[in-house]
Amino acid sequence: MPESVAHPKYPLLFSPLPLGAVTLRNRIVMPPMATCMGVTSERARLYYAERAKGGVGLVIVEGTVVEHFREPEFKAEAANLAKAIKAHGAAAVVQLFKSNHINGEEVGVSESDGLRAATTAEVASIPGAFAEAARACRQAGFDGVEVHGAHGFFFNQFFSPRFNRRADEYGGSLLNRMRLAIETVLAIRQAVGASFLVFYRHTAVEYVEDGYDLPETLEFARELERAGLNVIDISPSSAPEPAAHAGLAAAVKEVVRIPVIAVGGMSNPVVAERTLREGRANLAAIGRGLIADPQWANKVKEGRKSEIVECIQDNAKCFGNLAQGIPISCTQNPRAGFEFHEE
Image (cartoon, rainbow, N blue to C red; front, side):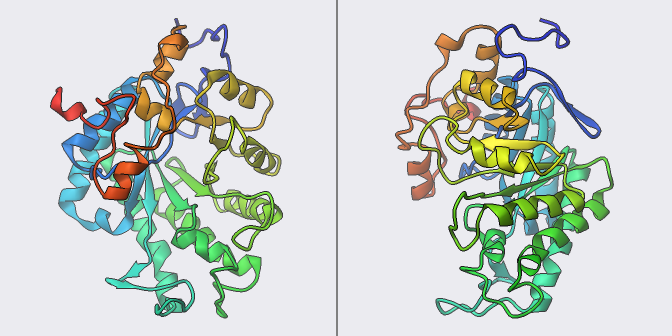
């Protein structure tokens, strides 16, 4: 079927989306999910390539520590990963992650649990590290980067007054708590130019949780857009029922003009299409569903929905393997994570 012809059942899900210099072939996103494979390994390259081959519009590679992009060998292998994803028609974005280690020392956003607080100078150096990594990702052939600011990790802790009790310019008021993220997006944008994509992943909550609420998230989203963001990725920690958190993405979408990714419960294409049709999001992320069946997008597009290998959410080989520090797989799809045995 020509790309210009609307899909008869899922016209929005399979519609293209222009993003700067890139046009996504559809609205289906493979979100960043930890694999324990090492993103520059052959195993990871074939795992990600299989999902791109399966028809998604965008692959976001799992969170990768920004400091790795200072290593020449790592950058060379990252270029192979970008090439493998894009060879199958998907756009390739890599999520950049900053742990709470600075110069090899574990620190906190604030002093706690025996950790000293990161100094103002140390925090102020972080945007530059992201800019350097983003420049390396552009050189490696990726279409963009995503700042990991979600799920209670270091950046998310700066946003949360529960963790952020700082008295300097990175703590206290909402303006100060979002300063690190805004400075980081600005630094990346300055480093990579206007055509390279910049995403930000944020955990939104409806009520006060981790010390912040939805109105603060909405103001944060506005400021991220002003800083030059292309896409905001709204990622709650879980979805108890299909599209249970799409309302959070919808709230953000009401206050920004840039595309919004909805995460959670989107593995039913009817739900994903309805979410897009109702204007609650511009893109739908399919997570564990793509571990279970990398051909999810192709099967839906070709009218083979009944053939999809469904994720049963037992978490045994995905989260279960992660807990053991070993490469992920899937009880429904034992081939997941073992694509490297078959090339």
